[in-house]
Amino acid sequence: MSERPSEWEVVVIGGGIAGLAAAVYLGRSRRRTLLVDAGQSMAVWEPQIENYLGFPEGLSGQSLLELGREQVRRFGTVSIKDEIRELRKREAGGFAVGGQQDTYHAQRVLLATGLTHLLPAIPGAQACLGMSLFFCKDCDALRVQGRTIVVMGRHNDAARYALAMLTFSPSVSIATNGEAPMWDASWQQWLEEYGVRVRREPILAIEEAHGQVQALRFASGGLLAADALFALRGDVFHTGLAEGLGAAEDEEGQLIVDADMRTTVPGLYAAGCVTPANCQMMIAAGQGATAAQAINRDLFEDNLRRHTLPMFVRRVGERMSVSV
Image (tube, rainbow, N blue to C red; front, side, top):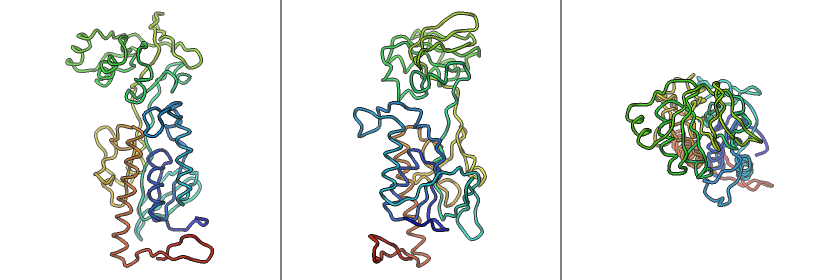
């Protein structure tokens, strides 16, 4: 697609795994689609992804994104770099998508803006990110099996993670970083039953070498040996654009969607980690595809109602074109 029309059928906000998958499906559906990528996908945090189907030897998150972008280009979706700052309804129908570089108009919008895991505010954490400090048990526990694992957190999810890690390592402990544990009594009983040690001292620093954690250094001067850390400080869901339109969220701050990835705002869809997707790349890709198919059906039905069904026309010098 060589020209950028003033009106898009679909604008996809977010160039991570969910957004790329949606852009592929919408391109193959021959919908005029704009993918707006701010370059903030958390996939780049992953140096080695081993649970994405079709890559038995694994690949980096950056490589997966690059392959996805190549596939999007193949099917005609236009991709641009921009940061979307405003999303509003238009009186004429559809949406105005306000970016730092330009404003884009769309009949439907898909939010694939994801989330950001909160990195522990501890010296040494950044250096270990993706190398020996992780956020996802399902993604990375197998990579560190048999090693000394420390879960950093103080709520029920920290206790759950620690107990689940015993499947992968006989040496698992929890560090609450100077805060009192907040998990339920039942979790405390299970931690005691399975001998999971809990360290409550404030953490002064993560001792590491070339991104490989070696120990937690406590303010008291003590050390806790570790080969891998799993941080559960929390997540920030990037839902601000949808909130401005009144989209409903669940108690964790994720956008509520139905089986077709529709939010509670008509014409606004969401996919990936901004929804209750368990923030898995495979799931995000599936949600992106689901949303794209639903959007295509929605537009098709709207075309029928308006008597504006796109018709295929072959023009001189063009392989494909659509007349409306």
